[in-house]
Amino acid sequence: MSNTLLENIEAIEAGYEFMLAYAAQGRESDEGPGGSEVRSTLTSMSAAADSIAALLSNDDGVFSPIVVDDARKSAAAISLVLSQEKISSELVDNLNASIHLRALLTDLFLLSETIG
Image (cartoon, rainbow, N blue to C red; front, side, top):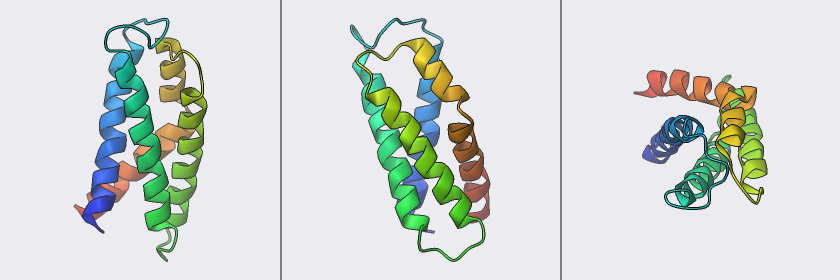
């Protein structure tokens, strides 16, 4: 597996950790000090999920199609959040709880253990 794949896995994992902290802040929106970081983090996570899907879409491994599907679903959920005028802690908490994002994280934990 390429460094690019590992870098994208790290972007998803680091973004999720940031989102856990953001969700705990009780923010009504992403406006104000430090709020813009959530948009940049989500944008990076979406790009990483898209990249993971692209990198693995031609892989003939039996697990790759599952990761590709979960990455695409996660990117769609992240895009929905990014399309909102305000990104509240509650909205991010709901994204964190999304089965699609959790499935991708679990996929990536498993995948990184097999390549690391």
